[in-house]
Image 1 (cartoon, rainbow, N blue to C red):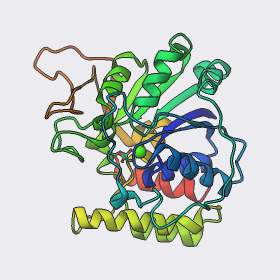
Image 2: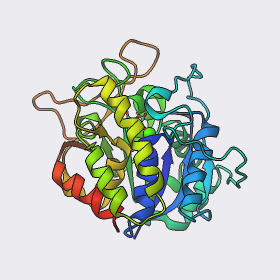
Image 3: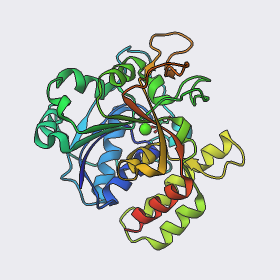
Length: 308
Ligand code: BDR
Ligand code: CA
């Protein structure tokens, strides 16, 4: 089984990614780093705990990460898409008491698992960039990195040019794209097609016997309705973050290109835009970028793990 350290901002699609990781017998979640993004860092942390509690997996360390980007700009949250508390209509119990682990735990987990560790980032890039700076030697031992972010020559989702994770802290995203080895990126080019449908969620809710069946439908329905407003008639809602985890063990559900990735930094109009050099004669690069999805493969794999 692959050991997964997940940086996230749950968030509905992050929550689905956490649920998928917990249910997939071939993945082992060894830690969650929770940061600002879809919701505040505090809210992301309690949502993560709530999911681990539901799963009876309170032993998995939760490591609170960044509360804001390195540029210290005012953060925009997304209650319309993810709900006021980040998991649609569900509110984790207000009186939950839980233990969190210090940021140093990331270094300890890297030393423990080394090349068997896979770091996945489905949130803004700040916390992972800080981990690269703090644990600069240890982090070279990590087996692989998987990041949800960017949009390559396709529309963004928070600006015409930029995707939310790379827009949120482009300095950090650019840093990670430069320094992470064995990096795979799932940009909007592929995640926008990872559309989960109400029919599939209803089927899974009625068939599965896992502890998440009570919330799968309400949280997804909230997210689906938000996307219906954005894109009337869309057949489902894109579960970006879950796809990012899914391709770790199912690389064949996507097609890839290999380039060096850059992210536009600063407070310019193109902030957060991700790009690659595709001019004729340009060099291939080190980063594997997912660009095309096998849709049936994606849905079949989702159902398989939810019913596992
Ligand atoms: C990404 O932004 C977040 O709001 C989602 O959870 C996902 O990680 C999609 O652009
Ligand atoms: Ca996310």
